[in-house]
Image 1 (spheres, helix red, strand yellow):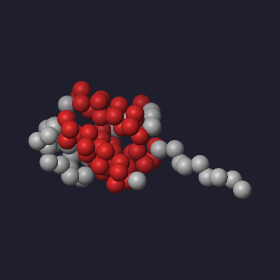
Image 2: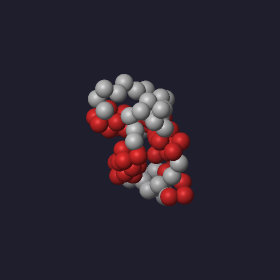
Image 3: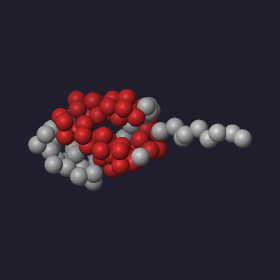
Image 4: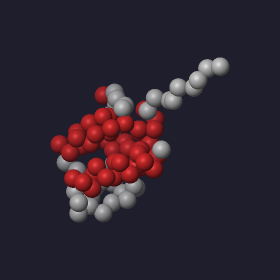
Length: 86
């Protein structure tokens, strides 16, 4: 699932910035593609696309610096799959 998560995040960023040639580990803020408005769009995209909510007290810039960090954030916050009971 992580590969799919990473690919969807990467697709979202490159759809907005077609000239961006980024990898999963590059700091997208230091590359200059992200401004404060797009950062909020990115938070909303992650929440809406992956069905998670990021509590304000857990909203950290470092979780959005790289596609890898965002994927890890999604995996941490995504509800665990329900385990059927016998």
